Length: 346
Image (tube, rainbow, N blue to C red; front, side, top):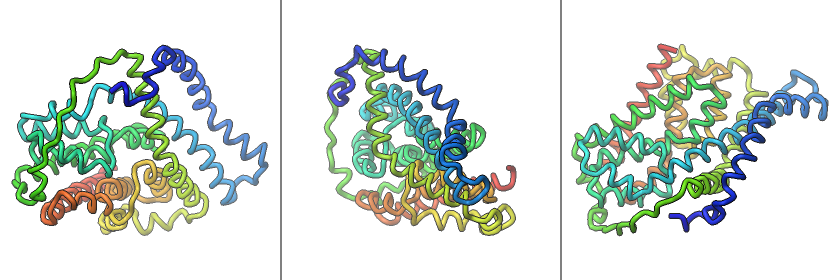
């Protein structure tokens, strides 16, 4: 494992880098509003209150805030992930009862690297290891929907309360959707060739020093931020445009609490879209600001991340259409419940 990360070769410097960078991170984060106001009001001398000024203020403040939070959390999760290799994950989930396995799989999905491009090898590895189909689906649902990127963006843009609500409801959807799929005994709808594949077992894990795990944190920052920074910029830019230019009551009228069709409409809009948490959460932030109810916004976000068409197309290579239909139907039902529930109680 150590050979996979060039940072591990510089382990003697990892502590030094960390001790120098953490105070710098703190100073920057605590002064972001001052910096944004200085750039807008003093340096650019833009007129307060007009659409362009407020859109730029939103973009200049939110972009570094999200990136700084993202870097810190990915660094910490990168260290944690060094303890959870794919092989160890399969061992943890093996020989567990269905519901216990669903819970463990959903929790492991939070700290395990995942994107749609890795859906097939992960699926094959789990099936080959004898992990039940329903447990595998709990992992596949939780991993893209509930991860450190989503956590960072939700905390940064909404605060802890909404972040905890999203993570809690996302876990419930992953656990119960996987449990239901497992109870339905749908293995016959997995592509025939899947059960014939033999995935090689990895060699025994290397024992890493903690300084090497810190190096893994830096490697994770470089890899993940390098892949998603453009989605963050696009998402915040779209959010900034909506913040500055979309009328206050337009989206509230269309997708507000009073419209019974708001939640299903949000899901239908979200499914054809392709984005990850980095791209969609800044947009959701502005939707709520413009009057869209929390439950409807959460439903939209979950549908974009968990039910995107590209993901379905990739999974079609290992699943037959009836199983994909069950998967979409059960997850959609869970998202509908979350949307309507939080529109009532929040």
